[in-house]
Length: 531
Image (cartoon, rainbow, N blue to C red; front, side, top):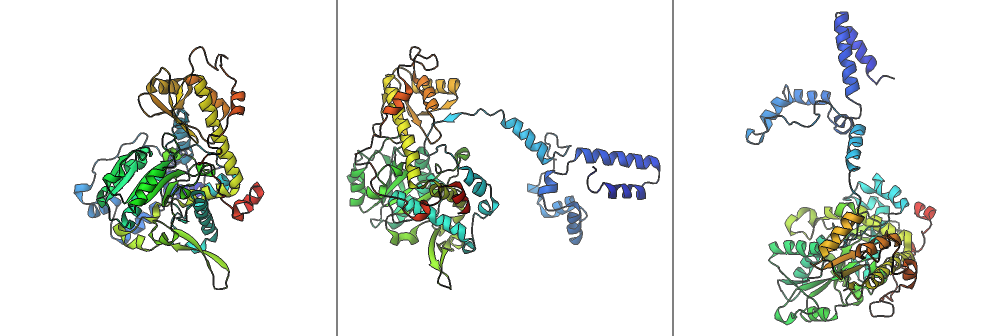
């Protein structure tokens, strides 16, 4: 089967070639170019300008070639005169061949298990969301809806996201996503600075926040003239300075859970804003920040079904306690109105065109909202419902409790007393570097170095008991290994005896969440598909 245009080219050959020798030469050239240049080359399939269109455009503006056009338009001071030389640039490669080559390169990657934490957790994306949302251009292309009310389904999903965030955090209002967690932290700092009545230019950040959150907040504060003070929220002397606000991590970057009661009291005494940076899966089990005195809550929704994606971005959120301040929120807010017939209709209650026209004075850039990932996280919550989310969180928490108990039996010190899924471990004899090297070289596992002696381990939804076996082997000595069946304990028995560390404490969540019917109706795959 010859490619399209073969017959036309043969006719052209017959009409142009005067001799059989010329015809043979042209035919040979034609076959060579046809075989060496696939139909699926990038210029042919992805660039809109064909050779004919380019010639027509050049002719319209009285140019004979692209080179002449370039010389007239591009100043010589910024123009490159030498040709680019790329490997194999003498042969056009088709898209399928290029993908095959890239796949062979990607196959050289080493697939590691990551227990680094810091706000990034592996997760299971339900297939129904992967196929019908992640891979659906109706969902993934319109990231900035300028006429968003046309897409009522998208509006409803973003409203679900806002509802999910407000109920999990215990706050009054939330926006429809931000770029990532670190960005959300900086937006919370700006919110506090602009709205605190004490006119302070100091903002406190707990040293146990994730490092990227501290650094991005610091960078964003500099042009505003806001000074970031980093310290221990549990011991800092707040009488030394007045703060427009302060931020803590809940759970902290080392895994420790705190109520931060003194911190909240001190910041509120100064009429500043208390900011909690949180993990929404943990909030299915732990007391929500709104019940601990938070004025602003930020975080990301990545672990609700959004793949890691090499570190970001992930749909973050910003929620506030006082819904009356919703006009001060960065980003977009979806609300419910009525149409001309009196029927309920979703709309952007706040997109604020100021963000398009005020530029540097705008509260934020709405294009940085991760609407697709926010929708995936919202549908993850719809699909699992409150009970499903609690079941996932309980499993992760009990696996962590199993890990803690096993490490203690192996003689190591677990420094985290109240935890959700992240712990800090001090090896009984090895340095943190030695432990991390063993995990890397022997088990292809990434662990986090917290200090010269302390290692951080963060579990997630994808963790299995067999993964714990490998973690125990990393921390085991030669006499106590699962690899050689010399385990000092039975892991199944250890898992069965694991219990929650927050049951019956002040940190245990007692308030309901996700009570709306939308989160309690579509748990079967066919129901979710129709929704």
